[in-house]
Image 1 (tube, rainbow, N blue to C red):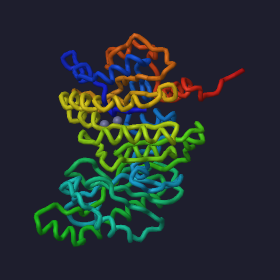
Image 2: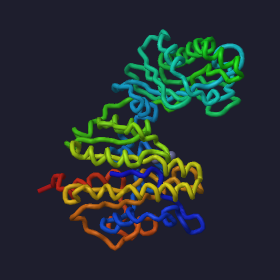
Image 3: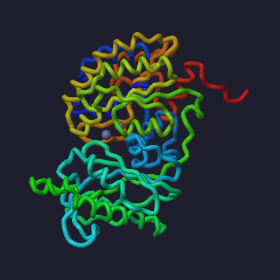
Length: 398
Ligand code: ZN
Ligand code: ZN
């Protein structure tokens, strides 16, 4: 399953990046396959990349989604148990007097601080009534996990805008919010005095003197892919969020060392490792992030250029025996350049397999896919359709 994140678009002067791009290989696969459009969650629902990937792997996101914090924590390599409470965190700069909750956020990214290793290390000794873990993520980001039997969602401490005070975490149980708020205060005290921040201040850089928490999620009991489908899954991605989804469903997760999660990624390495993975795994999800980034950047030509470059690597997939392997070309949602955000516009699906009921579609784009034999499907159905083609499903009824 090849996921071109955020690739589908809305027409701009009648054209989408896919109608402009020269992509003979994607078109060729559409021509030998069955095509259609897909609402990864349901019509009119704007999907996140995490909820939509869960759906594409056959998991109803309304039932199994654990919140972004938990998924990023898994992606950052922390093992979560049901009941753990996870947050995404930003190193930020706050100014003012009094406790952290009296201070105002002046930079949500602390001058886009990169090297937070020492700061993270210094926070590990904070004394709390529960165990906790903190790990670096990319740039100014981190993840924080509080171990325990948390059952409810709690609110963010990140005000999300500069010029506002750090928020107190609220929860139904006071002892829960107290743990989080104490952590935030103690972290601030340590960070404020840390030698890295003294150095930063001397050099005129904003201090990374606060951790702002958001995206709270409580880890749930999620049946593994193996348990649900009896199949082995591998997820190939350089994006923490998607790796987290892979881990959440108990899949193996791999990032080729030269993959970057942006437009300069090593496409060849990603395709090669997917082909390799199919030797030992039943289902391989290959995630390509760049089209989504370019959609968020509102870069129409960037999307065109990336699709053309990506397409040139696709002949490698013809090494696969299409009587044994089923290929799915699709996306997790649309990220139209005019909107700069995810939208609910359905995505394109092409399924390629020797015995598939091939249709009349010959071009891979938003306007042609809708004429295909798959018609309009939902995200949670795609895997079942592929497994049925491969005769790997069981009959319902007699
Ligand atoms: Zn996405
Ligand atoms: Zn996105």
